[in-house]
Image (cartoon, rainbow, N blue to C red):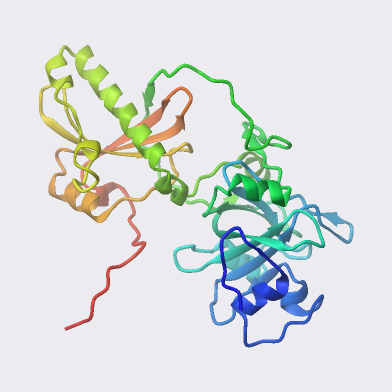
Length: 344
């Protein structure tokens, strides 16, 4: 039996043998031989998606795509409604505890490519039969060779939604770096989920925190932006002496300090800045480490979370909000993993 390998190709039968080896496979029939949404046995909440772009069913043509950021626009079966039990399971999907495995192809009569697992982003609360979803491919990006061999045309997003036909090789207009950072008040908490149709169609951007957490270059770029802005602020206040003393701690020491930048206020008091960066909106989630939480609780008077959002890598600019004090006071923290040891 084959094992599951990212970006490798599989038939429906081979996928069945991996996830449900104790059941019989019938080609072109039954759950594994025919359906697009298959529950994984003995694992409530986990599914296998078989997706063929450009498919039709009856009078309905599926409109599905993947953006250059790895956001999958996907539709359920045409008869499914928002309150159907399976749809409710998908809306409530938590990728920390359950998995949705995507097998994708762009034409019939070829094998499916395993594209990794999906993270729920949002669904359209105004349309059903079918229900419209957006998912983040958590193992994105795909190798360029895989995209080419699949015949996959990626879409880029604009303010009005996705622009078909643009591929990952498109080159945006280059802009001179400005290192500008517009500061705004912290947002009120929101939860990703239901969206009106107009918003759903315009939202095709990667907003899953896993994408930012895995992007080390993005994190470093955000820290460097905040460092430049801090130096400018102190120089403008007549404190060039303090500007020269700012330390990029995460570069000098590594990530174990519990914060990224040691800076100062205008009066010379120390500020410990932890920077979290995203290309997406102010309300998108992010990951914090146990030592960052512990440091913020031990030093609430000096700790400041700087959330950089809407980051533009071309201009090296964006917006931010600052949240001083212990992280536990301003953010809802959910455990994503545990360290286990035998009980005494």
